[in-house]
Length: 118
Length: 107
Image (cartoon, helix red, strand yellow):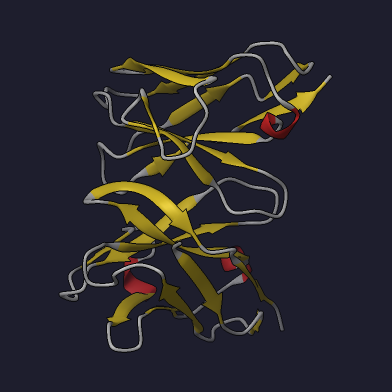
């Protein structure tokens, strides 16, 4: 059974960098694309970006200038860094496995709430 | 960018009834639409992909149809565990977009 577990600080100060890690178990890390998706409290879903084991990344243009997604296959981890955060970046952040090569998401982590506040 | 408009925003139904959810795209997305179910405090769950294919483990009371700009998710014979928010999502454009969601609540 695929399990994804997000981890990282729940509180980040404005202008600082949000850093999250997703640890994968029960699935090959190298055979799939891995995505980050966020959901502001009470709102809908926004796709952030994804990565393949080769390091190939695809980013949401609205976040691209602030975003870095990386993968460490030896640790079975996918990481997200979002710089210069503001209150608008407050959200539940999910990591998710892409459904094959398609941009659908068939396995999700439980999500982690990150609040941007001083 | 494509905009996905879901309607209605809220659907109030009783267990055993049929739910019909709509997702309309601002431009054609072929059949490249998925539907997700999200319960409070939980991550979304893939229900339907490519408009009409049920994901693994999804019961056959869930069905999807549509192509181009108009898509429908139907839940026949609602079970108590089906009351949730449902999101559509397209993969035909970059970046992939989600609709605003339809809440299926108990009447």
